[in-house]
Image (cartoon, rainbow, N blue to C red; front, side):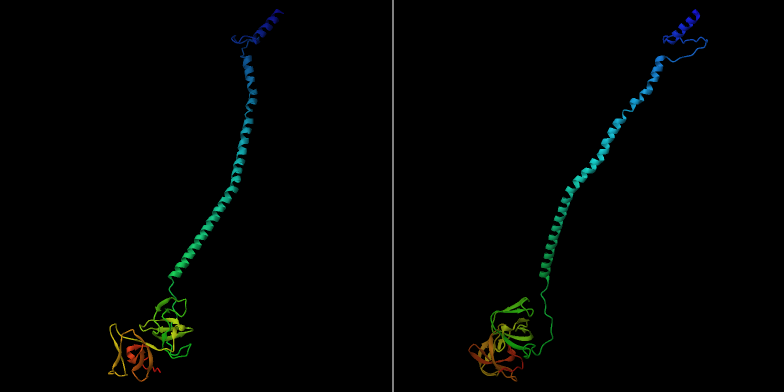
Length: 278
């Protein structure tokens, strides 16, 4: 009985023995190392700690929420700004188009003005020499006198043609060389040709102008002879009236102011070489 009690105490002392004591021995005489009770408890507690390690999963979800919202916020901002930027671009484009259109119109107007200013005056189409007037049916060429002291000579048979010369001497004889509607192409004593209105001419009045160089003189004689007495001395440029010419004679009867006499055809401009005037 004592032996069993002693063995039971020893077994209890081995189970509750101090940590620094030697390993307990079993009644079977073998030795075995047993894990200390506290170490076993400490080893058992770590499996419970992983439950606490799962707690950061909530912050991970909470951190993911802002990331999921961020793309939506970024996508919404440009969408809100695009409608405001589009009208500004459209207004700028319309303004640029208006400016370009105005610049093009100004350039076209400037080009048209430059071309109109640089365009040469229209020239009439040359026509063959006429021997009979297409309007009057009178022989051509023939002479006539200017009606007034202000007659415009144009480059073409219309008022839209520019004025080339202006005559300021009534009764100046001119030679009609062409007819076109109400216009006559003439040749003056200097050989200049151009167009003037038929209303500026006096067809029934025959005049002459003295030829010759400046400083010279032409004798107006009493009779149609070289040796006849002179009635007046006429300088080049003097204008007079033709009273008559014999077709077979080289002389014409003329009048200058109140002087009457005879002068050679070759010394005046205003009559054809073999023309007869009565």
